[in-house]
Image (cartoon, rainbow over all chains, first blue to last red):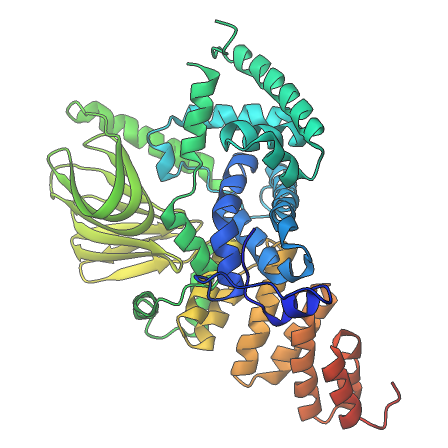
Length: 197
Length: 323
């Protein structure tokens, strides 16, 4: 939960009879507070869930534009993280569809993620990064999300369920299926999976 | 390798960096660092005329895809011929991440990196990928060193010189201290830059250009310079979110310049595009412009997008029209 400045939006949106949302001492504006709280998460989600053809920074920029413009429509601050994740998911889904479309009519749309590796990929093998992206792509959206949030970002089952707005049992079930599926994909690629050694 | 290890390395490689966060904040127009703003403004061209903007926009446009296979064959053939002639080469793999850190690549190349990038290739054919910040490069002449520095916007090839590459929100800027370099903006034609000269390549993607426009606006750049960047965005390439932001920013800049007719055209396009985020604010400003032209009919066309206070004001100003 973040503390946000009582902007004109939040003051009007609060339920009657309840005190207005309080500002966190270090925040200087609603936009700053939202960026401080969500920008790192959004950037990581775009890098991990977007796939190899989506530029994480471009996608994160679009997500944050929506967040900054529409966060005032979320009445309950406790629901903000899940709402932001939903915006990220929808933006990435659009970006992935666009990138697939452009592979077939590449000359019409010029925008594309730069295929050359970024600086972080200098030391981690390009092939390794691409292999993980390929395995995540094959999982499909539902299983990919739970696996990234749980096994790559280290979130608990309850945190994953809260972000995805699904019951905890559903999150656990999807995670089991995601782990089983990625295990099969990893073995196919010659990787060692714990329990299979 | 274990799957768990590969996932851990993937997590490390895709973790956000402080520089990435700062860059995104600049793209969103949030940074108010005066020093940074002055640095950005000092890099603006002396005369950002419409013609220059159009040339820069053309340089930013992608080349026809059919050229690349031929270019790739020629480059590969040239590299193969060159490889057969030169002495044995040692592979290079370096991460460049620091403040003014000096790195030697082989005997004849020296890099001073204040930013983020990495170097690969060999000591005789170094290939540097530069992501952000400043990179000073010195290459000993007449040693047959074939160095290339690449950013998302530009490729710089040198054969013995000293130059600086800077990449930030505004794009890639190359300045030559000694010798000659050839710089090609992505999709453009090669430019030859000599000692004392320099040139820049703008971002090529709509989101990157929007980020450049926001950085300029936040730094207090003239509205004409912000508009020149927005003009370089091809509307066909931008998705709905970026398109809406571009139209809203165009409206702001045109209004600041007193170009009311063009501002109103941007406002109407924003409304017609179904963008909702700033429609009330833009509608209120558009009504003011329409009323300034004594056009109550055009002002009433915005009635559906106005908030209560603005609507009441419109009714007072244009009492001859029924609600």
